[in-house]
Amino acid sequence: MTTMRRVSGAGLESWLCLPYLLCLWRLVVLHRSFTPLGSCSSFDWSMNGVAFTTSSSRIDIQALSASVVRVRMVSLDEESPRLPRSFAVVDPGWPKPAVAQEDSPDYARLSTPNIAVEVHKHPLRVSFLRPDGTLVAADSPARGMGWTERGAGCYKTFAPSDHFYGFGERAGLLDKHGAAATLWNTDVNPHTSGTDSLYASIPFFISFSGESAYGIYMDTAARSTFNMGKPEFMPWTSDFDLRPLPYPETSPGEYWFGTDGRCLDYYFFAGPGIPDVVRAYSDLTGRMQLPPLWALGYHQCRFSYCPESQVLEVAQAMRKADIPCDAIYLDIDYMDGFRVFTFNPRHFPDPARLISSLSRDGFKVVTIVDPGVKTDSRYRIYRQGQRKRVFIRRPDGRVYKGRVWPGIVAYPDFTQPVSRTWWADNHAVLFDAGVRGIWNDMNEPSNFATTTGTLDETAIHGEPGEEVEHAYV
Image 1 (cartoon, rainbow, N blue to C red):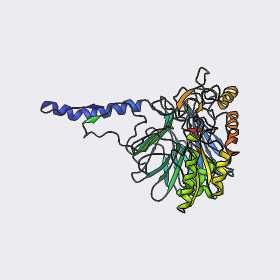
Image 2: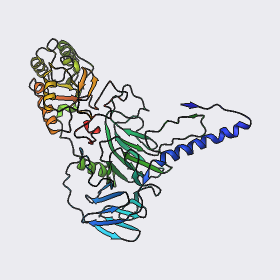
Image 3: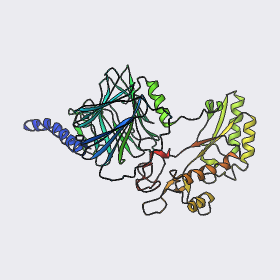
């Protein structure tokens, strides 16, 4: 942080001008790193979509349903880019929508019964309109979609009365109008209302005007940023922070979303109501199974109950006080040296007996499971993981290691089907003892050895080039 001293006399005029010069300098530097799409050089219609080509990019726009449109931009620099697969999108089973197509020298229009996509060709900018012609959302005329030094993104316009909700687990106010966010899973403690990245990153938001809504889901597992019109420069202050911002600046009336990934891939949900947006989004990304009734009751959890006599003492006190508790949680102290999929032989010598006793009193048991596997050659889970090559690796092929509760650990690479199956199978020791629920924790994934609290960017999930940091949760 650089603090500037106030001066008087002849220097006052220079002091007053300097904030504006610094603002202009920073805006120029930050905006210089964004290259917007130029004019359309060619385009091709398909049955329910259209593809455009510019000098740098190919843009595919596809109506997936009457209310959902997919927009995808890839670079022409790579002849056949190997892009990461989606870890979130499922087959929603939507019927093919009825699509009308219209072409003119200035724009191409793709229309369904619920939404129209109008693509201006020179330069290429995308707008979404209601059937009556009401504008829902539009690319910023000055910038729209384009490329940054780190990846790709899009500037769109918004009204001062618009509200923004979503983005996963976030601190601060519910309405993110005027806020900015970096989505990069981080194990941060403690956190405040001003903390940026937290434990769960979901690049989805809903825009609500007070009358109608739309949603955008950016399908990426790479580091992503959103700037929903955050005011950054306040020329009346004497304090200036000249460090680079973690997110691009926006001009008044603009918002930004972008990714460090090698393509921009987003889904537009036309609404018009918030329930319509949520329904379409959960169609696309899937819904959880209906939980058992006991999962909706009161659960007792703390860090931590140990030994087992303390667990029984808490359960007895609950019943004596007539507290309708449905579940008790066991934190990491139930494990043998914090080794996942083990029980401490001294403090929890007979877990099946303990859980059976709790069950007779109406309690279900939920155990914590952490993905950090202790690097101990005598530890069966670690030996299995090494043999099956299921751990996250460094670029040179060595196992990536971090530090959490057990000490030095390796992390399962859940992009690999063999790793997912191996991890699921190892839960048998818990379920066979009568455990009824799993408390997945530390799955940002957490790493005490880094300043970010998560894995550093040398960690390789799957094959080199895969971007799956967010998908770990």
